[in-house]
Amino acid sequence: MRVYISADMEGVAGVWAWEQVETRGGGEYTRYQRLMTAEVNTVIHGALQAGATAVCINDAHGGMRNLLVENLHPGAQLITGTPKKLGMMEGIDRGFTAACFLGYHARAGSAGILAHTYSDVVHCLQVNGQEMGELGLNALLAGYFGVPVVMVSGDQVLAGEARKLLGEIEVVIVKEALNYHAARSLSPRQVRAKLLQGIARALERKNLKPLSAPAPATVTIEFNDPARAAAAAILPRSRRLNAVTIAYTGDDYLEAYQAMRSLIALAKSS
Ligand code: ZN
Image 1 (cartoon, rainbow, N blue to C red):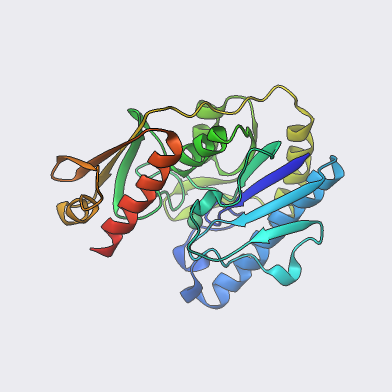
Image 2: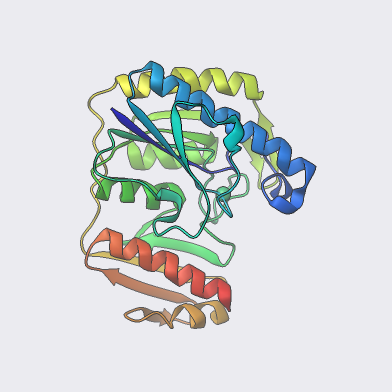
């Protein structure tokens, strides 16, 4: 049994401010690097206890260099650094039994803590007409590789997204979003206990199915302003639907996912 973990940072217990998850945050950021690493290590430990033969972690936040390798559980391997072709899902392949998304946050435009979708240039994003955040986009990519997402952690808004999209998977709510910049959080110690119970239950289940990734797949991105959309429209085969909205249809979901990342990168460059 091989277990894949994509680890983001905004959904770690206690986080509510950007400076806590950005390198320029200095000491605040360093505190949360340790807390993020501890949450990830807990899930690695639980997965190995449940019989995992290999655990692969992909650092999936910002510059993707947040997890402290010197503190990493010795039973796992870490994918770190950027750029990576599959970004938050680098390393996923057909050989994994299950995927976990830890420290995730809710999608752009929702009421979650630090809610966004990849970048603040994105107002909202859809796949084949269905609104998606990072959770949905990455769960579909896991599905493309035949891997079910069995556990997620984050705030209660992210939990709602997960239940709607993924049904009865293990959802560990680490904090309640009071608004974009305020949380009622559990203690890190309590969160680690919940993660340990969650991963044990998640890996016991045999009936979880991967999401089925659509083919063809159309990603539609509404950007925050026309200049961003104009820059994204440079991508060949993209279509500009209006001043701020770009669509791209991939023959399969993998192509659409990579186009989505390319469109956002172009938009950010403008
Ligand atoms: Zn992040």
